[in-house]
Length: 509
Image (cartoon, rainbow, N blue to C red; front, side, top):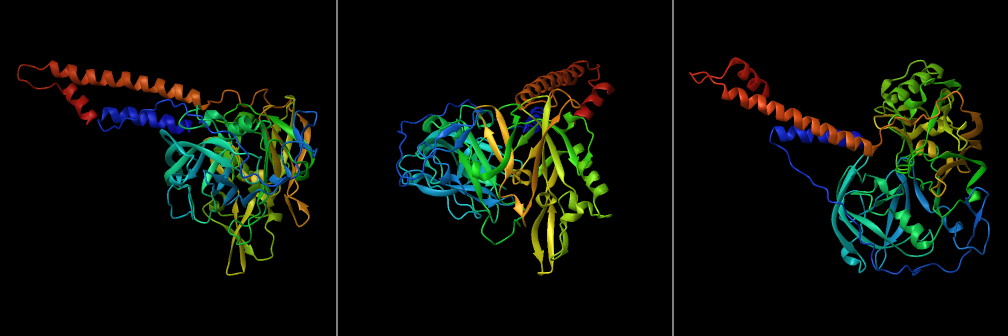
């Protein structure tokens, strides 16, 4: 987004010079918090509730039937897969209108369709909700793929399989979109779970989970299990689903130990990647290459996205270690599928991929590993004789993104209270009795830089740079205008313009 802003500033500056610009102004907005009372209307019958017990590290565990947060009802509250996204059912407005909402840890706006669209079956009709209130401002958000525009408002929301109680939240009512709603998806909105810094139009728009924590008094932590590992994105079978646990963690969803990495900065869920391995090959890149721009954990991104240099190194390493001697370049860049005869497993041709993350003890690291079944992904079959697969990695110009391709192997804990992310082996990342992910550590981090994410330009800094470049451009334009005007004043007696000034005019044309 920072690069887009930088390009936009340059385009804006030069369009001024050629007198074809349109001006856009942003006015800071303080969203009205509303006057509704938090209630538990619509809550289900009494069920097992669990207390928020400490595991010794400040995490909340489901362990006591006399507590206040019902984690077990949140298990399997997601539907979907990595190809179509993972979504949760919500009831919005009064009376409640049920919509499926995509879970996205890489953005911060809660936005729902509020108008008809050819790819969705229903939408939130604001006119039918007696509690919906307009905030009087528009909002627009652009993602890696797709964008939308709408109006800001507030209303009541209940999550049937979430924390007990109704909350009042900021809602962006989507009136128009491009490439956001796609054929075959079964969701009608997006739940941004990142920090206020990413909220649009500005950080005064309180994100959904912040409102949940404040109004329902639950701990500032959620955890996520995505169970689509190794399933075809085009399958007509029931979606695999998963679990979004708000307020703590559910021990029955993972096995083994939880490993933690610090959240480097609270905007995206930014982490610090120390190195990558393909099979047993260390890529041997400067660790700053992995964190170029940023490295984030984003459930709303389907693939594992890598900076261009890292992506190229990974593809080269896979090619060297793979049993396949020749492979179409179109497979690596995502423009072609690779197909095998039905019943033949392609995964034996490919190595494991490992990502090393800095541990909370900064002198150590731990390793998360995915097997080929997670990144060589089944897409479709051809005439019942061929199974076709896509490459679950792609190159990125705006940072490393640990998306669903990797997250499907792990139970991921977003411990915002302690400013850290936890990774444990997901108990649903299994195929044919074989675990599709691995986790190990601790390892010494002495062989990498003390700060692999240092020197990375964050979005606010890019804005400062953009405005500085605008000022420089303005100064250059003033000089050019002076060069254009002053020679015109030095005419000879015949009224002709000098050759030098004609050259300047010709260049401007």
